[in-house]
Amino acid sequence: MTTADLKQIAAMIEARELWLRERSKCSFGQGNAVLGLIGQPATTATVLGLFKEEDGQALGCSVLFRAAPSSPGWTAAELRERTWIMTMSHTHPAFRSDRIGWLMTMWVGDYAARQPDPPEWVRCRVPDPALMAHYRDQLGWQRVRTSHDPDLGQISLMQRRPASSHGLSAVITSRMPVEVP
Image (cartoon, rainbow, N blue to C red; front, top):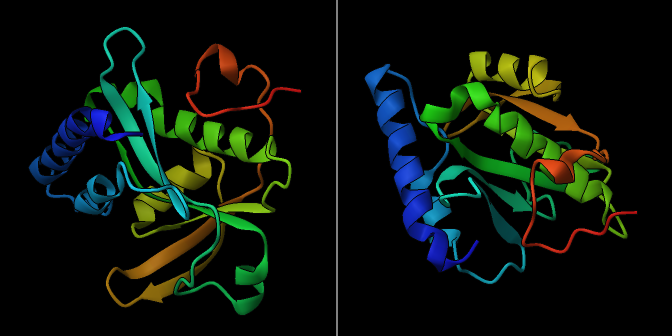
């Protein structure tokens, strides 16, 4: 994403955080950190956005680290594996039934699988047990184990293998170069 997308992403994050507060739930997506990364050089992190084609409304966003930074809970051996980290994800609450998180998960897995040197894993850290169950049961992530994070408390470390989804380009187009075999 570029700074031209900042307004739409900020509105989507604000709507998500309001929706969570109204339900007495916590936001773990680090909205201000996401906004601060938009427009920055994509040397280590890329902010991904999912937008409606017809009006450009932001449906979701996530940050993708193409190398596993040192992260509490992952073993030294796991940190040495070729890993991408998906983090700081947000989805627009008005589109919950459209499975935006699933689309973002599938796109990242597809994009990773199509790289010349794909990662072995796409990983994430999930701070809420109900959200962990959603990632596992609805989005296809595998729980590796639970760990303690000094800021978030107990978290679930999750991963999934990159996998091509050949029909995905019919649903999601990309401004990033994605080579199709």
